[in-house]
Length: 368
Image 1: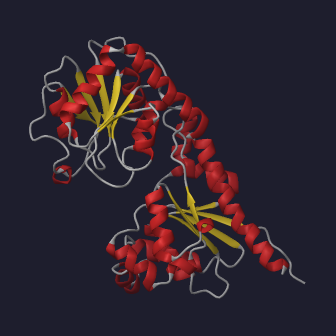
Image 2 (image 1 turned 90 degrees about the vertical axis):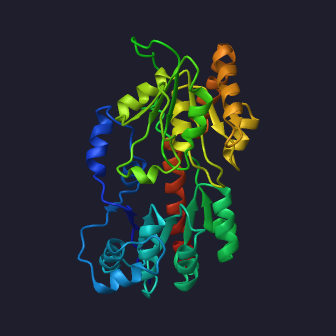
């Protein structure tokens, strides 16, 4: 006779982060809700984070082989492996923690079910780790956010489609909401934000002699890391600064247009900014990239421009500024899309259902 236990869920973070305090701030309206806190509450999951466990020499050595994993991820994986068995379901929000846990826990006879959100596995060290440690068999469910990444995982590991879940993008539509512009706004504002794959040089060239302000939410402690992201000399009408969550929301509300200027790449950078802006009902101009950005541009939900094309970007900006009804209609289409399809509630529900399906698979196996 098999006595069935209720599954024990675990949500594993990639870095130390005070989710509880973040949730408190969200409740007070200071920031958006964190999807991983919401997911953990929904599943009754235990939250784990690296940085709390002693690091061994083996952790340091193994981290050099497992792509993206740091010694603290291996130390956490070892500690977690002593706590879990076949009644546990572990969800890692990144391959840095997920590959480490799958490597350590995958060797257990009574191993837990494991799911990993993969952000970028198509790089040399990650490719090696996936094959060297047989992670295609240890990890029961891969999650990722673009079809390009999903196709890579299926083809490289020979996985059936049901073992790769394509997660939709999301934003907290209860925090990022439409609202009035600031009373002291003097002229049109182009808003933007983020650093990943950004090309603010093209945006600067497109707008430097226009009668408007370009305001960018982007900071980095490492000036060298900015590389060719920003022009060496910023135009007088362009500024970048740190914005807290409520100030960022107000920046979107103040913006006549949100422009997401990207370098050429084959994955989906810029989508956090995109969905936050659309949730605030702002028209968006975005560099075309394969996948969703191209689809949204073709559907008229955003205005798409080619990479490294300042003149095309300038024309798109002037077109929306000079045609406010067109800009408003585009913004409305984007807003309705977020409300219908890209909100955080649907995002959390989708992941939760996938994790619960792992428990259902185990029950089917036991039934036989």
